[in-house]
Image (cartoon, rainbow, N blue to C red; front, side, top):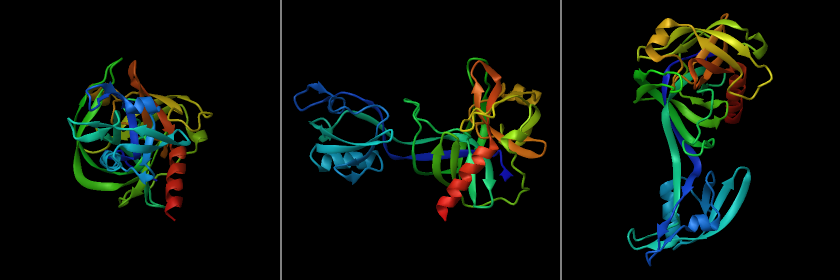
Length: 310
């Protein structure tokens, strides 16, 4: 693989519309009611259709509710179950539209770190963990999106009990399109593979306690290597973003960021000339320590994305 460490901007569109919460609306008589709550809509439900017509975003949901004059059946995905839930929307004179009392979300955006490119099938891997809804902590199912260039402008320094974060801005360049948002990271098709050295991927059994480095851009000057020590390995936690534990040794990194901060997720970790994993999480009560995921598991995911293209 080609390790990266470059900062990326992420724009993820959900598959359907994600229910963040239910709420009350005023009917035409001024009464406060919640049609969605009465119908049994739950936080975390994914609305994929109205009366059988597909819902792709919040605008299409609003349009379909009103085109059907409020007499609707929502097509819902609740975990792995497909449901059809009748609901009577109420007409609001204030907005001159039908309302159901839902808070919904159709996208998410942020910054992170690109882990590697897979030149064999022109795919990429990033983050090392999934993008979850801010309000419900549920994994967002990808319905498209992209990762693009990002300029890091600085960092809020982390401290024990208060994780910091990298601060950045999106740039026009695109790296590739998002195919999958999984518990093991973000994966997609790369538009262009950089001309850079290839590095072998270590199996989980080759990862050892001891010295390693991770690559990350913390100040907008490009990815640099920072010293860490892998202190604990769990070979049984295969499908997890917490396969091993490491602590930061690099004094320059500790001075600038306090350790691991938000935005570093996906930073590739190298040991003995091999790509062994990626940064995934920080210890909330110890910003100098973090978790990593095995690169082997991320490689398997890019192979799945590549196979789906063929």
